[in-house]
Length: 173
Image (cartoon, rainbow, N blue to C red; front, side, top):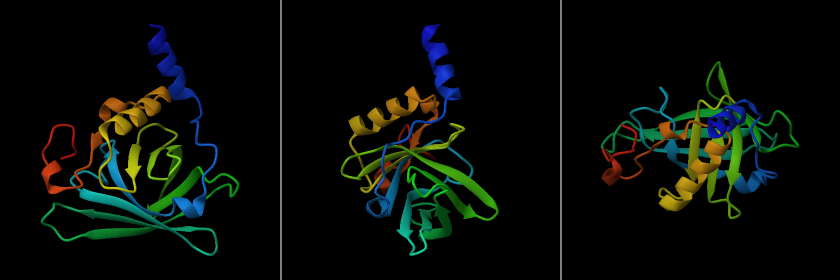
């Protein structure tokens, strides 16, 4: 019972973010290793977010995907910005006008190779990596960090980044 009560409290508390993000170092291509299924990402493979810092401090955001490994690559272009320029762990993202979303960096490896990003509502969560594949131990460690903050990580699914990943248990369809 205490565990259930603690999980409920974690879901109501504000998200704890990383202490510092070197924004220029964070830029680049991040492969989506895992995600909570949602209507925008379902049916897509080889997904990645690409970030590029603009001179005005806003961020170009390209979402790369395929609708199957035999399908041509596609992308959406959006933008992101920091509501508080002193806190690079919390972004606003707009990939599709007029929809805006929060982007909260919950974990970030020291080498800026792996990141955990979620929404304050805890309805969406992503494991991102600068590489298309990460170690299962690192993946599960990030999920445990998300669980501690009240995310329903049992909903998480890996994103097929390679043809051999498609159709495997635990992957998005």
